[in-house]
Image (cartoon, rainbow, N blue to C red):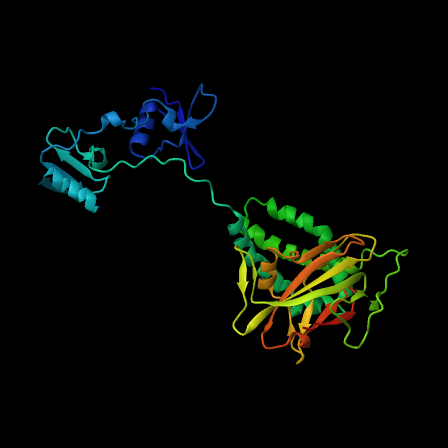
Length: 389
C-alpha cells in the first residue's frame, strides 16, 4: 500500500503514511475528525472525518438497543463490574445519577458492553431546542459597561494633578509643543500597536487608552486658542454683554457674561435626590444631595471648538471646593443636556448644557458660588456666579 497520505495536527505537517497507518492513528485517537488530511490528487486539505472508512459512522437511532426488558443487567463504573440487577434497579441508578450515560452496561443477548445512553428508555432524550426569544436589548448592558469607563475617565481628567499641570504657566509652552507632537505621532503609534499580531487585544487597549485620555485633555484645552480671527472682537478678560451688575461676587442666575472666547448664562440650579433613568440611576449619599447646574454656552470665535464640558468648580461659604461628580454626570448622560467629557461648539450657536455636583444637604443654595475657568492653554481668567434659592 502506497504511503501517500499526509496529515496536519496543531499546524504541523506529518507523513507520508499509508492508509492503514492513518486508520491506526484515528483508532488510537492521535488523529481527530477535525484534523486535516491530504493525498496526491486532492486539490486541497480536507477534514479527516470526510475520508471514507477512516472513522466509524455515528450511531443512528436504528442502532439503539431495544427497550429495557425483564432481564438481568450488569453495569461497569470506573473499571468495576456490578450486577446482576433488575430493570427497575438499573433505571433507579440512572435517575439518581449513580449511572451515567457514558457508563457501560451488558445483558444476555448483547455481543459486547454498550454505553448506557444507547439503552432505549434508560435516559430521557434531550428535547429539541426550539427557536428561542430574540436577544435581549443591548442598551442596558452597553450603558452599564460604559458607566465604569466614563466614571474613571472623568475622575482622571478632573483630578487636581491634571488641572494644576495644564494651568501652570511654566509648563504650558512645553505642553503645547508636546501636544502637537502627540497629535502628529499618535496615529502612527496606534497603527503600530494595532498591527502587532503578537499582542493581545487587552495589551493593545492598555497602550491605546492613555493616548485617548491625553487626546481628550489636549482638545479640551485647545478650545480657546485655535479659533480666533482678527476680524472678530474677542475680549481676553471678563466682560459683561448685558449691562447687568458686575460686583466682586460676579454674576447671578440669568445673567449673561463673556469669558474669553465664550458667552455664558447660568439658567438654573436645582437640588435632586437622584438622577438618571431605568438603566443608570444614581442616588445621593446619606446627608448629601445632587446639585444640577444648567447653563448655555456660545462659541464667539469663527471656527468650531471642542472644549471640556465639566471644568466648573463649586465653592461653599466655608471655602470648600466641590468638583463635578463623575457618577452624577454619567447618569445625566441618559436624559439631560449633557455631553461626554467634551463638547463641540459651533460658532454663534448657544448650546444648552448641564453639570452635576454632590454636596452636603445642609448647605443652603445661596451659599454656593460657581467658579467658571476661562478655556484655553494660556487662559487664566475666572468668573464667579452666585447661586441663590
